[in-house]
Image 1 (spheres, rainbow, N blue to C red):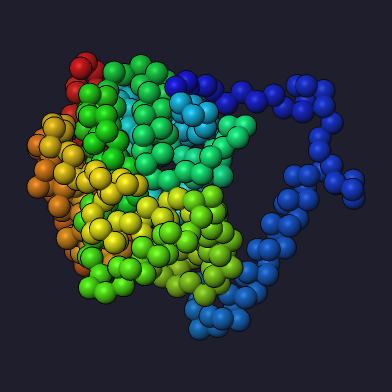
Image 2 (image 1 turned 30 degrees about the horizontal axis):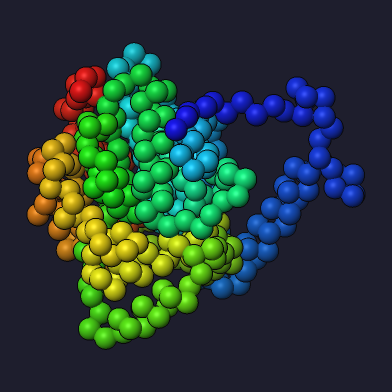
Length: 373
């Protein structure tokens, strides 16, 4: 597993001419024109669907210039880590951030006002936002195979952790996961243990699910019929549905629509098949339904900050708190009131003042654990 800096040669450095379309326009200009036209159509659709809504159509995420480091997994995938450096003069202990299902790093770094990544960097941590093989920014090997949750947990995440250690110079790191990101963290710990980590934070990450009283056979049939190689066009669907989207929890409508248009990713058939298995079995399990990831955490001794929100319909607290039954390290449980929904923890208006400081303070007390094993 190797970490490499983003050093792709430009057209200017190689002497190559920029890619042009048949119209003679540079490819990037054509893409910008198409994006502008799509934005105009979506905005017009929004106005026709929500004439009573005074909000603007969308607030797009900021796109700061960030250092990009690539982590190469054992099966040849190269996945980027976007680095936000720690504030000058700080010790810069590293923390790896993992985004949720169907989302991109923009959910963790939407804009300066709502960026979890930049808030933690301001608190003195070197922040790395990981994207995995399910994201469009990942570079596949020559002959990529279908993948699922287990592949990301056992190949991409170890490579990302090793890359952060190498780039930062610290022997152990922190990991924070939102939704699916926290589930990936649990699976990683179940397989590899906690030797590389100094502490963990999970935000609304389920390990238990309500088993359906009926319909389990339908879930099993759906899994068997769903090709692992399929890639569901969820990003395009989110864009098309964005004009009808309103506020979600405390997240304003314009930001919610901006995330739908700019911050969503497609979901692979393999990922969806494994998620259906979780609903069928009632637990966060591996692809073969042989390893219960929550049960396999009995040897983990690092501290965990477990954050849940009573208003999260995607991951009610009962789905997440089961990890406390087997986690052997100290667990600090922060329960947020019913007004907080799933995205509010990373993008909501109160997160920068009422949640992120709790995370930063908790991590601050564990900094020394990053220095030595």
